Structure formats: structure tokens, C-alpha cells
Amino acid sequence: MTTTDYLISAALILLVIPQMRGGRLTPRTLLLPLVSVSAAAAHYLHSFPTEGHDVQLDLFGVTMGIVLGLASGLATRVSLTEDGAAYSKAGWPAALLWVLGMGARSAFVYWAEHSGAHTIAQFSRDNLITGTAAWTAALLLMAVTQVVCRLVVVRVRAHRLTSPLVTPVVA
Image (tube, rainbow, N blue to C red; front, side, top):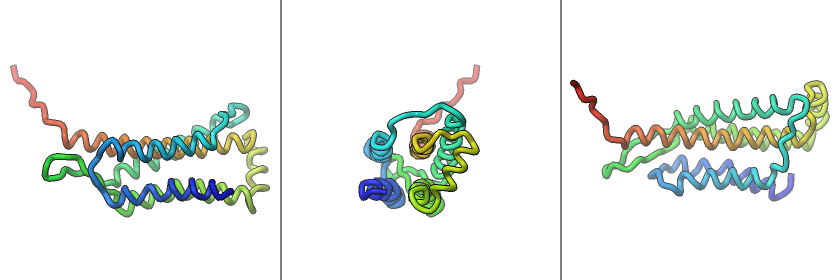
């Protein structure tokens, strides 16, 4: 991993800090994680290999991203401020899930570039995964999906709190 790789990984992991501080849900709180993970994807993602079982690996990454994102979003407290604005604050479970997802990807890359290279190469051969581009795509899809799912869950929960209740009309 290069210095840039470490900085990108650290930036994605440290996105948990504003989540734990909590704050009003604004366009900025929506855009910061989206722009961050999109920038990482743009930096690393050069192709979507589709040979062998690459697509299944991508689907596994997306599935893990959904699970981590949904769980993190549900573990985030969403409430209203006194003036009726939506407010969110990630607790320790949400932060742990965030760091687990973001950190696991970084740890996997480090392991792949060091002592795990042979093991991953053998696994890839045995499971018809075409190479590093397939792993890169799957890990980035996992990250993007985790971020998007968490944001969607938190925003939907906030919308439910801030939307006026519609009373049904009885005929």
C-alpha cells in the first residue's frame, strides 16, 4: 500500500467521527460520505471484470455492504431537535460496524500485499476469480453500498420523523 492508499483508507475510516459527534441532517452530511467513497472508487476502480466468478464476488461485496450499511443505519440514533430539524448520532454499535467494514477492506488489502498473496491467489484460481481487478471491484462495491445503505436508512428514518402525519379521510 502506498502513502496515498493509507490516507484514503484512514479518511474513509475517520468518517465515523462526524457520525459519532452527531448533528443536523443537512446536504453536507449527505454529501461528505458520498463524495469520499466516490473519490476512492474513482481512484481505484478501473474496470468491472465479469469473467469466471467475478460477478459473484461483486454480489458478495454488495451483499456485505448492504448488511453493514443497514445495520449501521439502524444503530444510528435519529431524533428531532427542538426546532423540528432531523438530527442523527451514531453510537458505539454503529461506529463499530462502520470501522469494521472500512477497516476490514484496508486490512484485506494489506494482507493481500504481504503474507496473504499466495492464499488469495490460490483461492482465486480455485474459485475462478480473474485477479486483482475483480477483488478491487468487489471491495469498492462493498464500500459504496455500505455508505449508500447507511445514508438511505438514516434519511428515511429522519423523513418519517419530520413528515406530518396524514390522517385518513373517513367516508
